[in-house]
Amino acid sequence: MDTPLQFYPRNPAAPVAEACNADPIVGNRVELQLLTTLKCNLKCSYCSLGVGDVLGSQVHVEYSMDQLVAFAEQHLAGKEVYVTFYGGEPTLNRPMMIEVMQRFPHWRFQLQTNGTLLDDLPDWVLAKLSNVLISIDGGEATTDGYRGRGIYRQVLKNLRQTRDQIGGSVTARVTWGNPATTFDELDGLVEDDSPFDYLYWQFVADEMYEGDSVERRKAVLVQLIDRFFASTDKLYPLIPLMGMVRNKVLPNRAQELYAGRTQCRVSSHLINVMPNGQIYPCPDMMYVPTMLMGSVQDNWLKPSPLQQAPSMPCGSCEAYSWCRGNCMKNMYLGYVKNDLRYRANVVEPICDLLRFMGREIDRHDPQAWFSKLSLPVRRQITDCEVYEYVEVMP
Ligand code: SF4
Ligand code: SF4
Image (cartoon, rainbow, N blue to C red; front, side):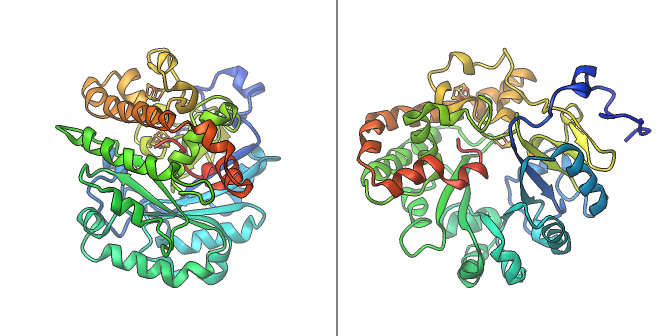
């Protein structure tokens, strides 16, 4: 960073009006994603932090807890703050997790982890976690294929061992990269004796949509969506389907927590603090200097630079009312940076899958299905807390 200035915000690029008026955080909630380290004990072949050599580049947290307190007092006062411990693999820096939880006992906490070190966390830490997102890629063969031999079993063993100590929900977080991923392996993650409460997936943001792979994914989506609507007394706990159905049945829910912006929160209230104290809206874009939006040490924060732009096609898209722009990183790279290869090989296939999902959901008459739900199931569709921790859209 350059020489500190004496006023707020210290970022010389921030317009004067921002300094006086605008709250950089839109709304009353803020997700503080604290990257406790950029080191990881696995080497997943598709890791998004590998882009720009971010992974492994910072191992130590360079800001003090007092600086984090000062930052929170300056920029987060009066907000409902929830922390996601993120990395790298966040459990490699347990002392930092513990210090934050002790220093801010009134905040809400989530852990995003690969699950391999879950059993090293103290019971009181596990008890305070509202949600644990565990990265897994599907069944054993798919997961071990990306993460290394034996990882699937190790994660499941750790999870079964710690499940009763975890205070909140446990969500399987799948990056759907392999086009050969089957309905059965995704379904298996939420079957009755599974330690997972929910499944959330994102379509991989990489060039893995060639040949018939989009059609193969669509065939699995048809099965998942059929299964989702098959019952009205018990929820099929797949967050993207729950969220899309909620958005179709109650369209304002797609907007209210994000002021109408993207549901992945990067444009409104998600701030990622790198171990060196720099703040970015999207954890996958911490290598892009123009995305810098604040600093803990220098105690400044400006509104997220990652916003919808006129060059993005969302406004005229059939999916916009319930999709709301999905992944801003993808849209930014494809339409603002105008990376035509990324647009054709990653963004357009994902948008095709999203629109397909919307039509499949409509085929099942979500309004009629919703009206038959028992009240507890209906409440999960409308108010599931996990929506606050993930991107909602896949
Ligand atoms: S499907 Fe794609 S183009 Fe359509 S709203 Fe979603 S992100 Fe935008
Ligand atoms: S969905 Fe949002 S947070 Fe996730 S990579 Fe895309 S822009 Fe970043």
